[in-house]
Length: 241
Image 1 (cartoon, rainbow, N blue to C red):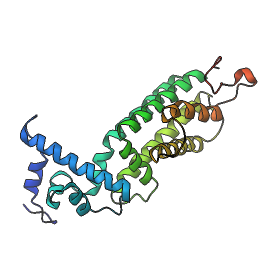
Image 2: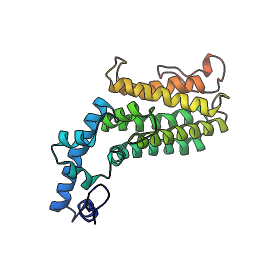
Image 3: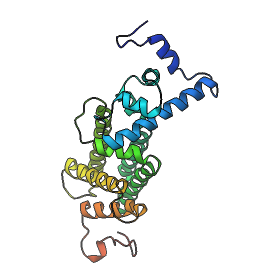
Image 4: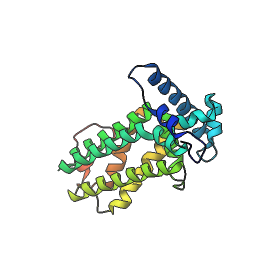
């Protein structure tokens, strides 16, 4: 059966089947998929999603255009595949932070919950730097075409951030600022710093960012306990509240 774009559906579906585990078909599929994803990611980061065509991707990967459609329905499907591991890392970190905050009853427990989330984000950054950069570059653009998948992930991240902030408010741990405002402000700060790291801006040791950012943000948002003794020291020394 031939589809509207001239592709034979039967052969497309057959080529998308993984084949026997460890077999030749599966190995070839994995290699070809990686070639296409690597070429596309490099071009997306350099030029932006809108400026890159499927022809550009297949030429960069050194394969025929028809080969692309054996593995991906369109450019949006390719972007979705690129985002998948980062999506999993980010959302699992946000969900874990939300669960921890649901049980937090003190400032230190709140700091630990946010610090754990920052560590997950840092892990995603180290494992998938180019994918994270693509997400950061494209997440503020119109949610159309291939960028739709990026925008969907951005909305999920923002929703989790607001929910997490709302949970901390419920326990009286944060200042009475509207959660939608403080939650999105935190997301904006984190994403700007990540982009600075990936753009090689001079902001110091990237490994120190998670704890520094956690301290900076939460010391600004949390309910003050009053007096010098109630202030959390930025150098990590002394007694914590």
